[in-house]
Image 1 (cartoon, rainbow, N blue to C red):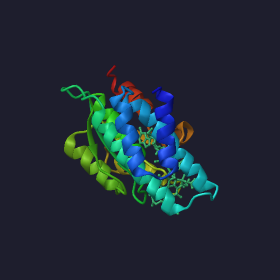
Image 2 (image 1 turned 135 degrees about the vertical axis):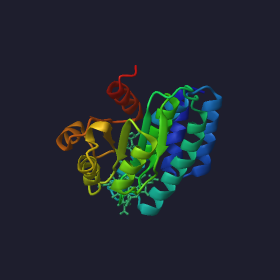
Image 3 (image 1 turned 180 degrees about the vertical axis):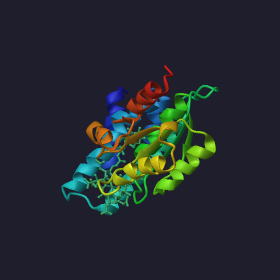
Image 4 (image 1 turned 90 degrees about the vertical axis):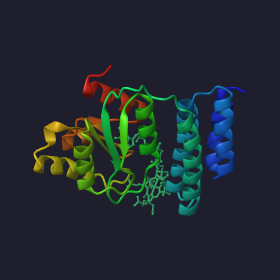
Length: 215
Ligand code: B12
């Protein structure tokens, strides 16, 4: 079966909000030699965005969006488990979370999996994470990078608040601060003074490698 056929099945599984079908195609694609990154990026990510667009247009409602998200999460767990192990020696320590007031964590989970697969030590704080918790955790684990995800325009300001918290504690120069999430842009990242913006998980790995000088 060609990769395209698996991608289309993955897109359809999410369009139909069908968790069993999503898990099934994830397993079959990986068994057939499709990389977990490819089935995720070209299949499930496309599918969840499509459902998001339908939600926008009023063609589907929140319950369907939630079912599609649950199907996506189940498929993602299978893909993440199939990612190659990172190197034993860590290339950097990253603290990451979804900002307070925001419960979107599918994209963040993908970023965590990519970072781990690329040899980074990742401390995932989860979602709806208070500003101080990002900085507290970074101090506790002696992090190199703090990453903050925001999917709502209403919660993006929390990313700026994390920077303000770092400044208040005199810690701004100690950490690289990276932002991501659908409403974020490079322009926005520059405007709040973040060190980098990443459009997706592989861009995130590349930007963090650049920031830390680990190629
Ligand atoms: C799935 C989804 C949900 C699921 C979330 C499930 C979960 N566990 O995450 C559920 C159903 C729970 C949900 C709820 C809500 N949602 Co919603 N949701 C989405 C949807 C369809 C997809 C998001 C997603 O998972 N995308 C797929 C991932 C892979 O992409 P991503 O998140 O962008 O992440 C990638 C990059 O951005 C980047 N990245 C992300 N974070 C980071 C962080 C770092 C550090 C780095 C380096 C990179 C990075 O890498 C990721 C991987 O490639 C979007 C639509 C959209 N187009 O984004 C709406 C969307 C984000 N939701 C929206 C809304 C309004 C809501 C609700 C308020 C709905 C409601 N009326 O209750 C609630 C919010 C509740 C809350 N307080 O958070 C709006 C936001 C509008 C806005 N601009 O503010 C959107 C845009 C839909 C819409 N058009 O209306 N939602």
